[in-house]
Amino acid sequence: MDAAVMHSALVIGTGLMGTSVALALRARGVTVHLRDVDPAAARTAAALGAGTEQPPSEAVDLAVLAVPPPLVGRVLADVQAEGVARHCTDVASVKAEPQHNALALDCDMSRYIGGHPMAGASRSGPLTGRADLFEGRMWVLTPTADTGTETLNMALELVALCGAVPVLMQASAHDRAVALVSHAPHVVASLIAMRLENAGEREVSLAGPGLRDLTRIAEADPALWLDILSANATVVADLLEELGGDLDRMVVGLRAVAAMDEDKRRGGAEIVEAMLHRGRSGRARISGRHGTRPERFEVVTVMIGDQPGELARLFSDAGRAGVNIEDIHVEHAAGRPAGLVHVSVAPGRTTPLREALHAQGWQER
Image (tube, rainbow, N blue to C red; front, side, top):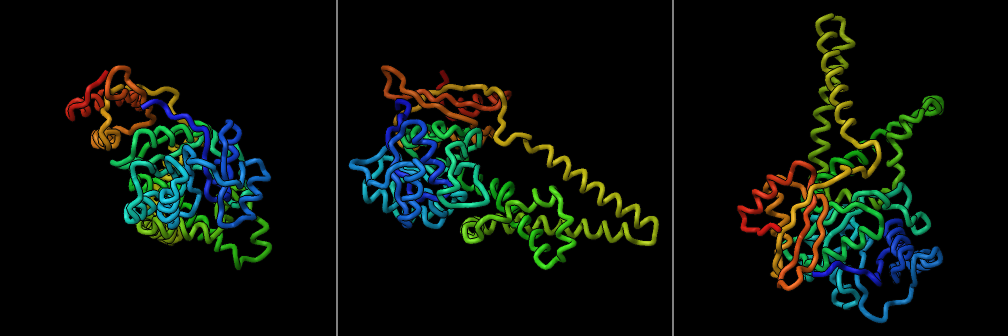
């Protein structure tokens, strides 16, 4: 259970995300092989210094699947059948559907872990790739009960080489989170931008930085976003339905503000002001600098056996205790048929974690 060291990688899909991963790995000395259904895209990425189009002569340490969510399962099955990589991950922005598809295709889930770097741009293609795209950004990993320790460590190595911050979550929890912070906001930005489509030139000319910031993400490729939204449709729809209720309430408040009756105006103003205050409060919860994390974590170290699924059981026990694992490091324990897992959690969360793990029979070191 030694820490993973990546020497070689295969990046499948040379759009923004794949090319950026490849550039970051090349900058850290990793040999990168590139593959894309569009040979021109792979050639462009190679010309940018992202790697070589030549296929690997032996199995690489890690295959990174930078393909749309609906394709992850099929590409994973093909890669594993080909035997071209020892471990696999992906960078799709939805995690539950690819995981379900991979299971349905009988993929080896012990050598696969889902991943999603929380970074991107409004434009796609290899020419938009940047080696520093992931610097300081969150990178979610979604291990399952079958995820092998070596595969997890290799994914953590990938995150580290790209300069990102690892976050461990269950696939369904990830999809709920990104629906809230990414997918639903994208739809809202597009709907607001739609209002401008038939607006007069003089009206549009008055647009300032506020509207530009609000609608910037609506520039993204609609076909790409259709794939993303389709893979997370129910969760996004639920959030938009809740938002619709809030919009209805705001409309009621504003209609009342415009009424002739003083009591109605006062009541309407209270509704509007309360919702604006709640919006301000919600905005304050977003870090001023993307990717900012607490300056320090507290660490709990436990022994873990070599049995399959032990690491996932640890995540599950921590999750049931309401403790979010912020980072994790696995190392070999000399002279023992087991390893040490150093679990990093937010300050003040070690006590409930220790109590929960002790109750489940974990041995702390």
